[in-house]
Length: 509
Ligand code: XMP
Image (cartoon, rainbow, N blue to C red; front, side, top):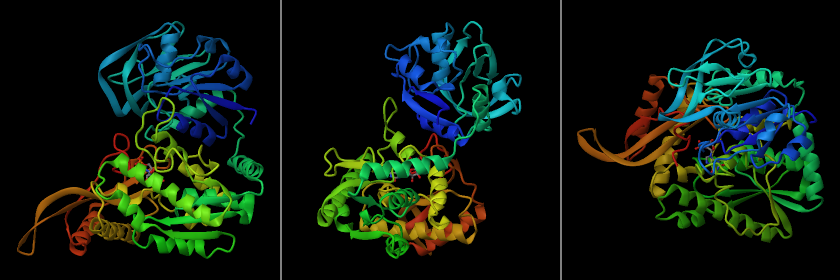
């Protein structure tokens, strides 16, 4: 881990996605806020530095900035989006506000003589998301990329090894983005030898040391993240771990039984299941605001864990399978709150545990899956599609009632069944139904109906930070729609959500 890349965070939504891409290229990386001192940077001795994007404008008074001394350290730097604008401004170039925001996947013309774009094609689809743009290059820099609307979309000073791109190479929506990052790592002279196994070994050691022979409760949802977190803990502390699964009444059809079958029958796991259906549904009565739903659920989970911990006696630690996207979307540092994930932004202030341990907090979903496989977890569990902690509560728009829950469970079950029947379940990374609060007029038999509209969502993604829509064949959609309106009372219209993330999120609430 001596060889590292430093990522300096200016508040970008994708800051750890950059860290994750660097790790994917087998180079160790760490993220630090832009307030990091120059002395600290020197002591970390990085092979290269990456500036993230961020929501600010460089000419605002409170724009995040770092001491210009950073450009005198002789370390290669790559600035992304706001990071490139900061570099431009700091080194004497000019940044202006455009009349219109440039947003979405754009064709970028690349100058292939730049080391940053080696091995790419001269036209590359890339995610652009900015209003400000570089209008004048700093001295010593040349332009290496442009789009129709953004004349300077990439810059370099190859003598100093300073590079900047207006687009986002870290997201999967950008074609060959990882190649661009790898090219930068080559410019930094990295040796590409870091492995995920180092993470596993270090984490187990770290957990052993921290917990000693104390007792731990691990929140298990049946999803990948908590299953991997629990497995790490079993390796670290064995039978001092108890896993707890809460049925909050917002689970998919048959889910509670499936999860207890997977975990309840293992003899290396102390497993308890709590029926908290009434408790959650009472608290959610009449609640329609998505953030309120998330906060109520976040708090209720903790209260259930606390009361179960009391019954077990002397439990200091609670383990959660929180992963990186949960953290970033809940808003940290300068990043905006997108939604309060139940296990981060939805947590109550007062918690009756000495500490919450989150061993996967720095990892992305695909990294968690790789870790799960390397821990020997069954691929059935590791490859399960994600299901959010707040469950169907954030897939029912408006108030949650028992009637709506039953409608959604049945419709969602048909959707999942047909996706599996058509062998699409391995291709689509997450797919589910959403019960909207829109009612519309239909005709069934010879009668008028006035019933709910159901939305289907299917996305393709590896990191769940960005996602494209799944191209489910029309014939399959038609079969699903027909089955749902015929078999599920109170749905008379089915639509398919064709929005990528961004600008939409995967869940509707
Ligand atoms: P969004 O909707 O933010 O979802 O694009 C990204 C991924 O996170 C899952 N998700 C959650 N998972 N607790 C969770 O455990 C939450 O509160 C939560 N909210 C969203 C979502 O299903 C998707 O896989």
